[in-house]
Each structure stands twice: as C-alpha cells, then as structure tokens.
Length: 106
Image (cartoon, rainbow, N blue to C red):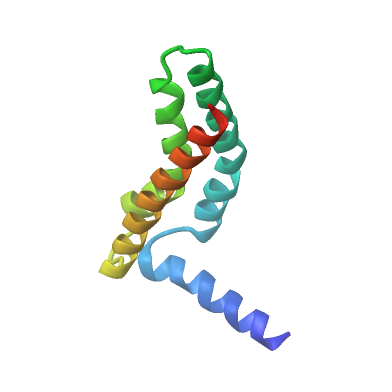
C-alpha cells in the first residue's frame, strides 16, 4: 500500500512542478474518450454515406489531443521528451484512426 501512496504523492507533485493540474488533465483525458468514439462513429457514418466528413474528422482529432493541448498550453518547464512522446502519440493516433476508418467503411 505504501507504493500506491508514494506513486500518488509523486504524480500529484508533478502538477506543481510543471504548473499543470493533474486532476484537470485526467478529467480532460477521461472525459474526451466518449466524445472521441462518438466523433469517430460520426466520421465513419459520413464516409459510408459519401458525405463530407471534415468536421467530424477534425473533432475526432481534437478529442484525442485535448488533454495534451492542455498540457502544452498550461504547462511550464515541460521536458523535451514529453513533447516528443506527444508527437509520437499523435502520429500513432492518426495511423490507428485511419485504419479503423478504412476497416469500417469497406
């Protein structure tokens, strides 16, 4: 149980160090998940119906990166490796989402 307390203390301490509220970050991260899937479904439906899908696709992307946007905007003194990690996550997300869309629109 001491490990959990140590982890929690360390994790919450990062918020003060980098000027990011971990609860807000976590809330945005978890809160955006259902909207991501709703927008993804909307995008797939629009593609299947051969309608313009730019708006739902942009909203899908925004839902995915919303927590990271908060980190980039509110954070200070964030290590460079975090920005690289975010970039890799975004590139992977684009790839993964494109595969899901392609598989569901056949």
